[in-house]
Structures are given as C-alpha cells and as structure tokens.
Image 1 (tube, rainbow, N blue to C red):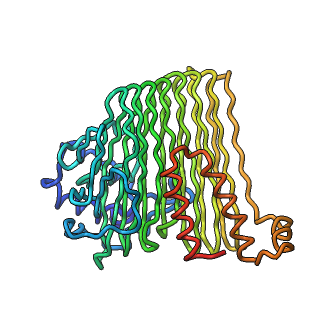
Image 2 (image 1 turned 90 degrees about the vertical axis):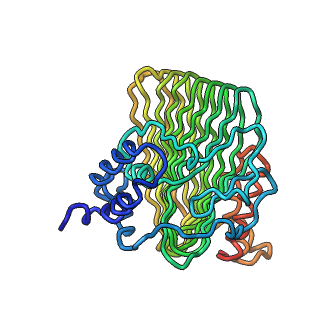
Image 3 (image 1 turned 30 degrees about the vertical axis):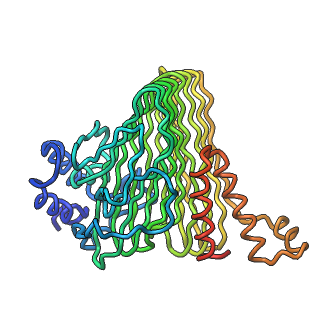
Length: 415
C-alpha cells in the first residue's frame, strides 16, 4: 500500500496540489509544510503525543472545499453584543462583523503571514498547507482594547467540508485584550485552526474558548504562544461539542516573571472523545504556570488530558502546577491522564496531580434527604464542580457565555 495512503495524507496533499497556486502567501512555506505532512500523515496512536487520540478516521471521509455563500450565511446561536469578528467555514464575513476599536484588525487572506513553524506538528503542517483565511488582531503598546468575540460558524452545506483558519493575536508592551472565541456548526466537517499568540512585556491576554461544534464534526485547535517578561497569557477552554476534538497549547515563557494559565473543562456524553494537551516551556527564571482541567463524562465518552511542563536549566525559581480532575457519571465513561515534568533546573517548585471519581454518595444522600429529586441533585453537584473550574475567569461577559452554554447543554443532556 502507498505510504501516503496508509498514513491518511494523500487526499489532503491532492487538495493542496490543486489549490497551491490560488492560496495566499509564500508557496515555499506551504511546500515545506506539505513535505512535513506527507512524512507524518494524520496523527495516530503510534505517535507518542497522540497515544490516546487518533485522527486516522479523517481519511475515511471525503472532505471538500467549502462552497458556502458567506454573504447569506446565518448567525448560529446567541452572541454577546460586543465587537466581533465572524468567520463562516473559515472565511471572514464582513457583513456579520464589527471589529473592535483600539485594535489593528486584518485577515490572513489579505495579509498572509506564517510565524515560526517550530517542531513538526502534523495538524499545524496541514493548516499551513491549506489555510485560506483567518483573523489578525494587533493591540498597540499600552492600549486596553477590551473584549472582542471571535465567532467561527459552519452552517450545514449537506456535504463534508474542511477548513483551516490561521489566526494571529499580538499584544505590544503593556497592552490588554480579552478574546472570547466561539465555535459552532451543523453537519459533518473538519475545523482545524492554528492560533499564533505573541504577548509582549507587561501585556495581558485573556483567551476564553467555547467549543460547541456539531456532534458530527472533528475539531482541532492548536495554539502557539510566546510570553515575554512579566507578560500574562490566561486561557480557558470549555469543550461541549464535536464527536472528536483536541485542544493543544504550546506555550513558551521567554522572559522573567512571565505567567501562563491554561485551564479548562470538558462536558462530554454519548461516544464523544475530547482531548486537551498542553506543553509549557519555562525558558526564563521566576516564571509561573498553572493548569487545572476538569472533565465530566457520561455514556461512553472518553476524555484525555496530557500536560507537560518543561523547565530549562536557566529557569530557576520556576513555579509550575498541574491538576486534572474527572467525574465519571457512568461505568462506561473513560478518562486518560498523562502529566509530565521535564526539569533541568534545581531551584524549582513543580507539582501535578490527578483525581478520578464518581459523584459523592454522601452529598447525593444529603440533597435527596431534603427532598431534592435524584436528577436535580446530580445536576447541582456537577454544576458546582464546573463552576469551580470557571471561578478564575475575570471577565463577566466571558463567564456568562460559558455558563449559558452549559445551561443549554444541560437542557439537551440532563443528568
């Protein structure tokens, strides 16, 4: 069997060859990415970083280029009344957007730019091959740009499609920005996004994601973040949708006293598979990183958390924390956790932990003994578990978006 067919790369490479001369940006960068992707192929469990999650099933679907008429595409679901940027099938939609003041806004389609590609990541290589559009947000030094909503929609076109948006968020020294990113859709599709984040000295970026895709979709989101001295990248992801999803963050703390917070929650049921994978590199002294991931799994759902903290020899006074907690609401649900520490400095404080369990029987009994019905008692305990995960989200609007999404999910999937 042809190796490219065996690793699932051929259909995507054929698409690239057909589109190559029409895609924006430098062809040489895309050609290099195609070479990388042809060697790596779609991720499988043979690759250590994908040991618990395989995307080989993507080769079984004939994904096609989106044909959606962007100008007539509907807005799906409630959206906060805030400055927003809307993409439909990965393409910018100006008629639905109102870019924020104080932010220099552009699109990848108009000004294509690829940042450093770093190590060979198969889904980043696939994105680099096929990216057509995306959002570029640049906040000048000292500007507090408030909140912007980044909304990606996939209306059901009754045919399997794939899109690969390329986003870039850059904050200059002392700047502040909150990005509320929402992904929703209908039908069968692959949403494979890459976000490049650059946080300069003393800048603060809050990045809150809601992944509420179609249950027939595959969602892959990779963030490549660089944080300079005293900068802060504060991220949270809530995973509710997609039949298979992976949120992957590679963050480098490159300046002293930089901070990164990578928190999240997954609420999955049926046969959903949700993967959160993080790699935090401490490359400067006196930096801190904090990761807390909560999973609520029912039916035959499967959750994955892989978290790696790398501490360079120069990174003395590092403070790194990692915690994964899971509630299994059925005997057939599954959670896989793989915390990792790779430390080359000797003056550090790093810790990690994992807890897996069921709802507390005593707490359930307490609520039932006071007349609370069983289903409502379970819901109260699960919501309390998730509320704790979102307690550190500072922006009220962002927190409201997540709480409303959980409430809507709960109406569809009661305990």
